[in-house]
Length: 355
Image 1 (cartoon, one colour):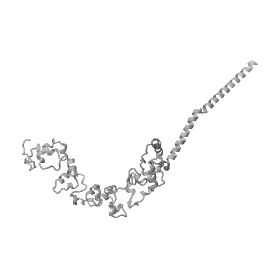
Image 2 (image 1 turned 60 degrees about the horizontal axis):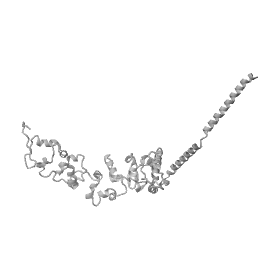
Image 3 (image 1 turned 90 degrees about the vertical axis):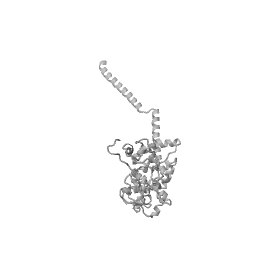
Image 4 (image 1 turned 30 degrees about the vertical axis):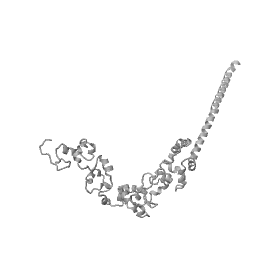
């Protein structure tokens, strides 16, 4: 009997041992899956932080909340007084649309909020407005000529590229805008002239007579009561918008604005007896400061110039003269024919003579 039961007992012991081991392993696994109290606390705190972060992001995205606690309030106030009343800040200030939202919020969370908590004053909106953000609502301006406030513009031709706030920076925040920019006629004119587009007043203006147009912007200075002394304060390139090219010559005796090669040719004109350079330019502060000496050269300069010119390569002299001007007199022996410091008739050096 003992011999017959031995295999059975052996098998039973093996099964009992297997069950005990399995039960122990299962208990071990179950214990491993149950977080310890400290781990549960960390997980709970992390969850609370995530909820708070989401809440801060959500609440901070509401313009009224943002404007209630720091110096953004003037921007929010002027926004509510503008044609963009009710427009969410992010609709305009996310340069790349919704894809830019994470970057924008990260800047708020890690730069603006900490700065506000330590008492620093935020400096106001600084993010530029992208062209795409404007066209999301105003795409129709590219399909027609717009007439507004007495101005007429074809955006598809005149504003096909670039940022809209170059001309419309004040439309949302008025005087609180950091860099206030509005349409400047001179900028339009230079493009019209260079592209040979019409540039008469009525091309872009409507509803105002000429005298009214001259009472605003730079024109009120250049065409005001003291225009004779102030008209030169404007950009002379734009005079031809209304005036013929020879209009300035009547008074100034020369073409204005000066042509591009004028620095190299103005000496001959300045030496004319009827030259009118000093009507616009001060001799001392303008001419002498550029040339480094009194201009035109005073009486007797030729006789004494050797004490002024350091050499034939003196940079001051070479502003107007070529080095060959010196060698003409000093090395090739073409004498002026006088000793009183005035230039007489040149006497050529005899052929075959030695220098």
